[in-house]
Length: 344
Image 1 (cartoon, rainbow, N blue to C red):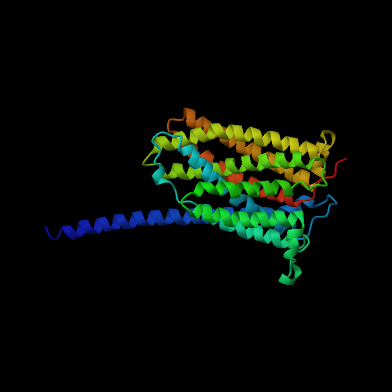
Image 2: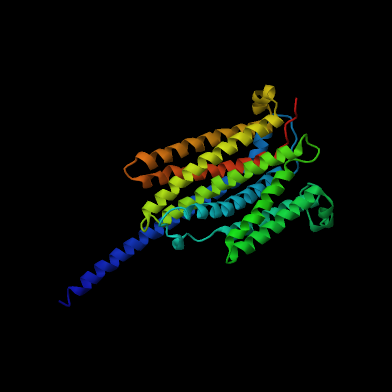
């Protein structure tokens, strides 16, 4: 009997090693995929502006690629934090959802990334919207004297407060500083010299808020679905279905505000021409095509939720939807850094 036991032990050890090897390989694959997505997200704002400006005769601000990259990080930070709050709120409406077994919060990391991005953007404003070469180039005190400087400081402080709220016993309170960031971005995008700036700011505020809930909400819902795949698959599917219904309303609001904002900057008679002859129009066209792709993926995921034999297969198109939405965020950041088209 003693001669048999080591053979059994050896088999168990080999099985354990094989299982550990598979898990390790899966972790490596996910890490590589994540790094590839991050690299792609960084390349879009860095290479997007010069590509969009080519042949238009328009001049961009200095360091437009770096500014677009910082805005990509800032927008992504808002999406991650706001999406967690939104998805958690939806999960409370699902009977029997194991809320105590929620994925680890990414909000503190998002707030830290948002703080760094906001600080970088504030340094650009402090240098007169130029890329600072040294600390002596920046007029920090002057930030308090200008509208753009005040808004930049508001965003920096809002991310600090959001991070503290995320680490507190009441993480839901970070909704207030995140709302402050959204308001600051809406006001920054529409200076007082613009025609009806408050209307434009209101449209941007709704657009940014709905987009953050849509993108970040789906990301966190999928994280919950993966977490509950074995312990509570039914509740995970119910949560994804609930999100899909709300997302349809969010998409409608995003579409309406986006079209209205476009017509305010491009009169109907010039839209088709400016979509191909201006950097802003080209980037906007790319964003529209990406959003249409996202909508198609969302419909595919919803179809699987309703009619597939295994509703969990909806995770695949929904996962692809998150990836494309990440590209949409990067393209949106590029859009904010490009010169606004002239009204003809």
